[in-house]
Image (tube, rainbow, N blue to C red; front, top):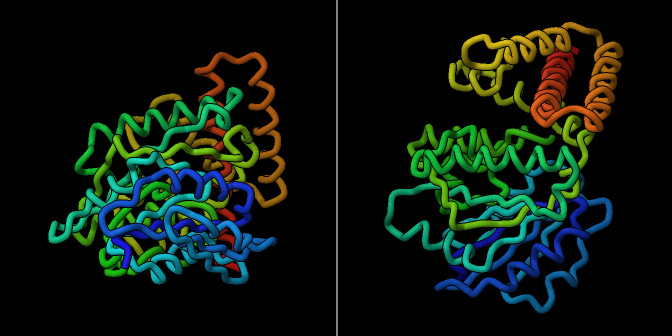
Length: 330
């Protein structure tokens, strides 16, 4: 029985997985060994079985239909895993060779359970253009925040594209919540429940993975995902009267936390406008906002352009909140 199981949820990842698996092939087997479980979440074209052949660590490919979302796929991998420790890895992450054994060593047997967030390094080949570089800068700001809270990571900073925890710890809190069937918040929800169960969230900067995102240079894709995240935020907040959640999710107020600076006033005002407009007008406003920001990429200084990215992204998040509320009323 392997000591650590790498769970890789994927949808349409046949082109991404060879590089992800090749990186794992370079990782020395940790004490007790490792296995890799790829969970094909209803990809239009099934993940080829030959990807599992000839690997340094045994690879299993599980498939289900239809597409159910990352939370559902990750749970299937965790359930099927044999390892004492689970390492959840996105299908576009290249794990550093030492990180596999490092994640196992971060969870010694008999220790109090904890969850470990590994470092994510944006790939210079993928995070290109002004928007890609903006995302890379955001990741570096997130890293600095994590470094300041290494042994007490805030739940909202706990992304699980490169993340490990004991299998029994994940099962004890119910794994990922499968209501999250679109992009966003399945990992923050899991971290919130782990923290409430007394599990320490930790950050390890020395355990790294390179993120080879196919969408890192696409502002339109980013906005579409944040609109989906707004829908998932409503599901996250449902039935939970928690001020900390409202601070993070802003489902009710739309207002960023902190004193009302001009920037926060713009965010709150734009969110309020998006939430009140009827569907077709809302979509038209969002399209116009994206177009304007893309035009700014030619002339605006970084500070102004980055503020524009933030505001327009937040408008899409607010639209997702309105979408989900309308769906629930309907």
